[in-house]
Image 1 (cartoon, one colour):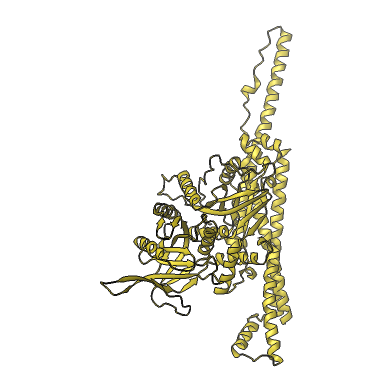
Image 2 (cartoon, helix red, strand yellow):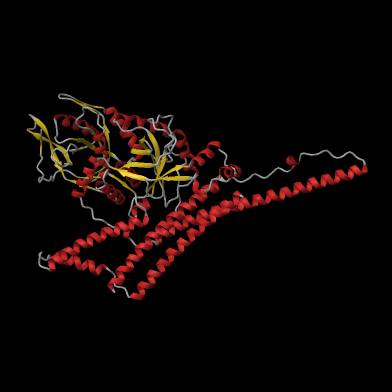
Length: 344
Length: 282
């Protein structure tokens, strides 16, 4: 079972930064990424993120109307054990200051993270995206899936928190009532923003040159038929999550049972009191004082629902990924059948 | 100062330079963002040094001022940036520097001297972003002493052979970026699952079509048959595995069953969690 170390703290949100005059009523409708950013993210994971470590970094760019343009990025060093006094904020500030000298956009617009088989819905991500979105309205988190990319096509998704979830995070009210009030389902936690890749003309020229200079043989990983490895790992992760979920559900069930038992006890107690009082009245004695029932029967602590929501979101994500994967593989299998049938 | 610009003169002196596409894209980007009035940008190259090759994996631009008779490079900045970069990837070292532009000027010698203090035998990379000769001309050089020892000594930049190195995932990324070349306003969206398989199949189809036209040409006598190509073709046809129809059926069906089962399971799980949520909210 692959162990996954998640960095406990993620890039800190910046202090107040001014966004260039765009009205922030509507969130971003589209993300435009430069090719350079894509290459940098790929390189960062490739070099520093072997195994199942997540790598993170900061995105820089600007907001143009309802588009978020990401023009550059820089990686964030990983949390190693011997770097206890590493000051992240200072690193970020220094980096941004230096980049400003070379005319690179120094506006923070989000952050990126690599993921292992699609598992990124976690408390840490939520917190950090919330702090980003709170400071800058349009920030996004880019999730780069290196394993899926290695299978043949770039897997890059951009997510933002829905306004409903932002409200809840602001109130810090994660109890069941709070979530019920906001009617949040696991599907409404994140919203995905479509991504478009843009290259400047100079970079286009570079691309032409590269193609001419080095014809790297196309390996066609996309048409690879093997699926069991990927499926196994995905299913394993899914099973773990479902286990977590079922534990949560059991906890919730015990809680509701305890609650109802307590209600019953309360009723019984009140009834007995009333009976006794009635009896005493008939006997002519002073009735017993009304006691504060609620203090006697302290209601049990309702279990937090936020974790369940996150787990549900994660499970949903896994299922989506698995379905995408199977649909691709089915297509490939049918193609292989056609090829074979033609031969025989 | 002389620089050897003959294309055919491949150097046997000095290491092979392997460049990652990230570096080139970064250089292009910093050229586009240069200050007003600056005709070229320079920066530091980071990477790893091997016995016979230097692999350039990262770079950052360094602000500098250049005029007719003097050049000033912000060395503090360079050191700072290098430290910051070292925090992220401790294995990268300074391997040289780059400059955009077509020629090597006198100022380059001075800058090169500075970099020789930072790295042993630094590489100098030039990229002609102004496309003076119609191409980008990505070249790498290493400096060598020349002249009469003791008397007039000068520095000569000898060219090195430049290769491009990609990680697998980088190649896939570059493939995607290549597609922006043909799009109208140089943008390209990311496709999703089945479209990608369709796209890949389309590409294979195109390749097959090319091969078929070649074969037809040979058969009709329009082209001379090439034996090596013929051998490749035979390899290609033989690569389709010869399996009996029943075996293939069973394999195909078991695979399809696996995939369908997993799809069913994931749909079931999704329905389950949706239901769970509705119940909790009651």
